[in-house]
Length: 604
Ligand code: BGC
Image (cartoon, rainbow, N blue to C red):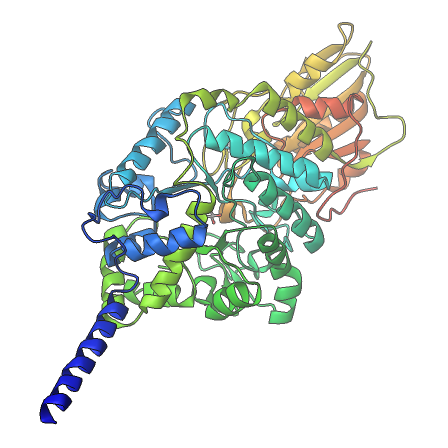
């Protein structure tokens, strides 16, 4: 009897032991017996015919703790101490912050740089590709020679979702040509204050417009004829970033940007969360959390918003990426910041530099139970889902053959069309427009008339943009010169101080506006015209029968008293590289169809 009891006891211990072993190893190693863990061949996760969730299950099961942690790290490429760190730290994602580029800024150098990083990732044990992100917010405009489309505020003036979709698609093509498939765009921020330096990145103030155009941009970026997405869109910044309180910024140099949003939750949901709901419905798989706070707590630490609202209520299945340094802004103590951010629902951390520290902190947090294995696995699963969906494991590597798409004639024609459709007539006296192409004497002046940098605004080659004709494109002056007939005379002087003639010119066109800026650097107490611009306008006013003022700006500017004497005022927003589109609108080549997406106080 005793023997039988002993036998049953041993048997049950074996069964329980086996079960415990099975459970404890479940999800940590999938290789079949005898198969090497590293560099597997024909593993289920490598099989493009399997459903994505099955591929994720297989891959997750093969990953070590270190490999999982690495997937959560998003590192600025200039922050990499050496390329090998991609494999040493199993880094999941890299980015080029604005202005961060290869040593020589050519499309080929971009392609080679990104491929180098990708090759390094493929050499790792499981060969998980890196996701490479960029702010291609108005074309892939960090790349020299790229087509620079109008900024979002101009596209919004067209109210044309089809156009926005086509622009986004062309942008994805110019990104893919350099091996980049992840765009930190579109912005779904809702502009509530023209003093903000990020107004031009938005589709304006109306939630429905933002929602519709945002969805069109996401679909344009993502839709593909291949079995994987074209490029991954990143609607941003979740949430309320456009509704911060003046002077609430945590950045001493800014006023609104990185500030505090005070709205009650119902208003936040109605006006600001709504567009993200739509974005998720059309397939967004990566969403960026803002650098603002909500009711005093940084968004990256808002478990309610990121997990309860975004992931549970809205059913978001993709990953939440924090913004630049956003997690470390939660607390001075980096360990606490990391734990708080990940537990709040951040899945990928735009560190963007300290990846070694992040790896150590995460290992400690998992060991201590401060972050659960489940939370880690959930974050990795969400990131892998996006990587699989965008075809990183399956698509052929980008090759030099694709480079011709960058700045192609076709894309420039599309950008020109976008400029035509964004030109917004704020005021015009009867009989001024359209201008005649023939037999005219036209004076052209203003800081923006012959300046591609001013025309393009921030996020063009550099974060804060550039000043001057430093990249391929057509200025508005070029556009006018190329549009008029041979018997029309164009006279140009930047300050409008043209040789005085007894007779006034038939028309004066003055192109004025804001110098480029980006983010909080562009926060202004009074967005207005500069003294030099007003002087140029006055000079041309005195010398022309009709005066047209073209405003290049990222937002509604305040008009001075003398604007009452300007015959026509057109907001051209930040049109980008194709200034010809402005001339098209002036001379009746294309109809003037746009209406402003933000409110201007227009003089009589
Ligand atoms: C901006 C984001 C941008 C990120 C990466 C941040 O400063 O707030 O909109 O995507 O930088 O460049």
